[in-house]
Image (cartoon, rainbow over all chains, first blue to last red; front, side, top):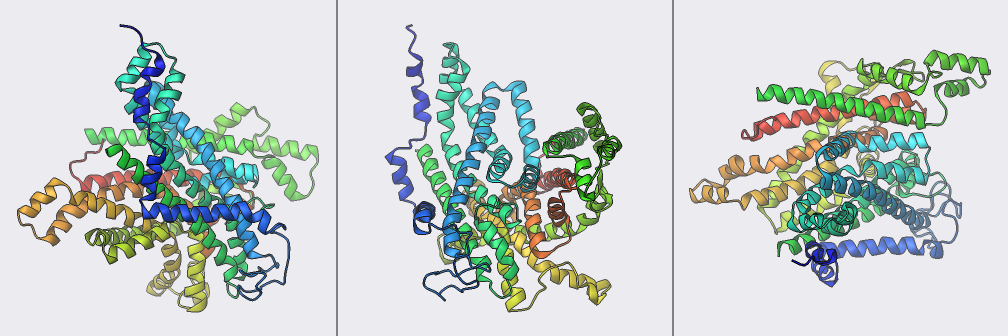
Amino acid sequence: MALAEPDELGAPAGALMPQSGPCLAMRLLRRPCAVIGLILLAVILFMAASANWLYPDDPLDMVALPFLWPGDDPAFPLGTDMLGRDLIAGIFHGARVSLAIGVVATFVSLLIGVGIGLLAGYHGKRLDQGLMRATELFQTIPPFLFVLAVVAILQPSIPAIVLAIGITSWPGLARIVRAETLKLRQSEFVEALIGMGLPSWRIILFHILPGTLAPIIVSASMMVATAILTESSLAFLGLGDPNVISWGGMVGAGREVLRTDWYVATLPGIAILVAVLALNLLGDGLNDALDAKQHQ
Amino acid sequence: MASLHYWARRLIQIIFVVLGIAVINFFLLHLAPGDAASVLAGEAGAASPDYMAALRAQFGLDQPLYIQFARYIGNILTFNLGFSFRQGLPVLDLILQRLPATLLLMGTSIGFAFLGGSALGVLAARRVGRGADIVISTVALLFYATPLFWIGIVLVVVFSVWLDWLPVGGMSSIESGYGGIAYALDVARHLVLPAVTLGLFYLAAYTRLMRASVLSVMSRDFIRSARARGVDERRLMRRHVVPNALLPVVTMLGVQIGSILGGAVLVETVFAWPGLGRLAFEALFQRDLNLLLGILLCSSIIVVLVNLGVDLLYSVLDPRIELN
């Protein structure tokens, strides 16, 4: 029997891979929830992209009289806070910070979670046991308290917040990826690749990883949502980066004037709600679309 | 004998978690800029090198790292979590003082979320696709995406500032000097807003999960055959569908207990509730790292213990499941 080229044998891995081409997009667009999620996400992305262009001034600068209520002055449609800062400019600029932190922190967790899941699932035995014990340990520590401790120790700054969220939110993903990897590891095509002497890093990276992409994509979208919530909670407690504006920080600052000028604290919270809702809807939609694909 | 084996394994797990977190804590403490001596010296305003050296010797900070580490682990295994210089009390005493308030808040929230979420989930599943389902599912989706602290703030504006029905914060009206039942009622009044704030997110999560779970159980064969045998709809729901559908919700409760503890920090800060979360917040801003890391350790132990409880609850709900 002639030995096939490794890449030809890799074909079954491609078949297991979720098709992320037009077919998935069509499936997604057929779900009203996912469409609403995409529209809301587009609004947030537009706010982030246009912040510097629509509101070029520093959103932390005083630009008008303090306590202008929404609608008082057409130049400041959402009014100003107790320091005369334009709320709508803050919300637009806050979108940049929230999205950036959410995406980068999720990327950090993806690196850790997917890496550990692949290694544990592929190699099994002692390595698997050790890694899963560590994963359980990280799952036991209350994530938000863990984030608080890390940020308090490293001092509040964007890199510290990203790192803290990244190193605390990977355990769930690691378990999912491990389970998928275990399934693929036992399949015939992986046995064949091993028999052909392909190095394990190539098998893992080019033949197993693609097969685990579907749950990773769904988790990633939910993880960005959670990271945005965590970042805003940190900023609300006063542990945000003091040099940038953040939705959670705006809510926290507005608490001081809650009795009289409640709009200062409540308006930025709606932005957080919209961003998180968008990502959750998108995640649900992706989950259904990819699931239906696999059941075909 | 299976259960003896189970308890032995659980005990080993708890020890492993405590040791693991102790290692992480030690690592974090040494990552922090400056040590306890420089913090204390900074407090005092100025310090001579001699004084600093004396302080370091007193805390054992002049010892090699591995000796400090061994001492730290030894302390933790004997429940000595160190001393909070800010509050002037041992860390363990501070935590035990604040623990009951947090457990009361968490217990109430979880009860509210679990009962409310299960009931709404069943309601939505029974009217799937109709008005009630759409309303319940949409509201659950919204609360699932709303930050806890923002819900707290909105509830304060509506129920304390505008309507003046419930107190803004705190755990009791100190000046009233209530005792007995009057005191319990007073605490209950203070508990409503924080518990609802902490519970709404989980209520939304359990509603979504219970709805999906009931729908999946209803499509199983044993339900169809029970229906064919003529079991009436109410009994079918109560005896066959709900106990089975509750299993994933109970699992989720165990998984989320750590996240509920994290939420308690936010809620206790918004409502000045004198619990563990509020203590963590104070420790954070006073840079009282010993206290903060002690809270981290104790809350992780709470997570392990609650999961133990969830396992027991599981074997009650489904007698086929054995503890192993």
